[in-house]
Image 1: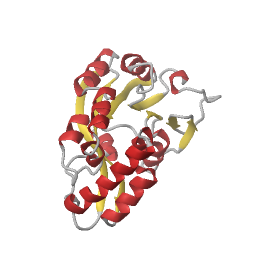
Image 2: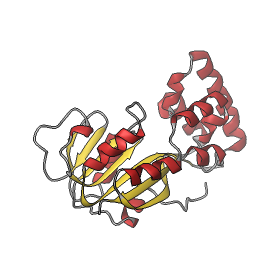
Image 3: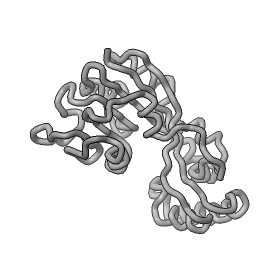
Length: 236
């Protein structure tokens, strides 16, 4: 498996010189797992959390709200929203809600899967690409559900941030010693989107995956990565 020359989340946030000692709000996809990853780098642990968000910081903000959108204004030095609009109310509303939480001098990060890179990439680099190469309907649904990189950057600017930048981030999801281990992880739920398929469709896809892995996967370990596009800006 070739190494990735695309930065991971920690490297990306370090490159943007975020203040790890200031509170960080994480919202959206896999918020709990992502917050745990950031907590290992941050000076503070997780102060409060909800179903799809977490606050890293030294203090709990009174009573933790049900939604991250209801956290106190200007509470965070960094707000990271990853697909936090996927189940409503939309990117524009979510970006403004996230920007409201950013303190002066703080940073907003909006991110979504980089679907173009994923679908065009090699499954050797991004094994998750197998999911969509084997299921064209699933690929079309993914394209329809993700936000374009241009729209992400545009919304960061519209939300009041300055010095808007974009970057691709590789998120490592797991390492598997061999193709059989990866196949077993997929069967057991490593691809949550398989739950959207019927039992028959799921069985066929798993059979096709076994064949594809035997012919395409590298010898040795498989590293599951997901490419994200992150747009970011600073509240001046």
